[in-house]
Image (cartoon, rainbow, N blue to C red; front, side):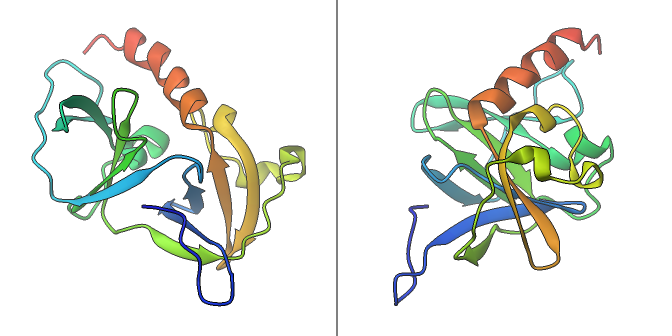
Length: 160
């Protein structure tokens, strides 16, 4: 998904929700939304790893953000996969609903001003780089590289 603008020059950002958090994926990275792509399960891996998918010659891990952040399964079937930075360094997130569009967000990069009650748990917590409020919830912009780096020790510590 490219960064479109509405008529009149309003900028649009896309995000998805997990529990009370709205998550904005990085605006500078390309993203693609796939509807029910074929994924391959990987045995003996953490429950938050839904598997992998092959996309344009790259094997991309598919992560369930609800399982990762809340340690519970999503109640609805996961009908979408959001590919962020598709390619060799890509990551995919399984979603029950497509991302939503938010116009003209004013992001605050002083993340110290985000109330403690609105912070997500690790591994996302350390990847937050800006926030705003819209549609009655906090919207948190995360750094994909920092987020993926935080997954490595979780994966390594898993003993299935």
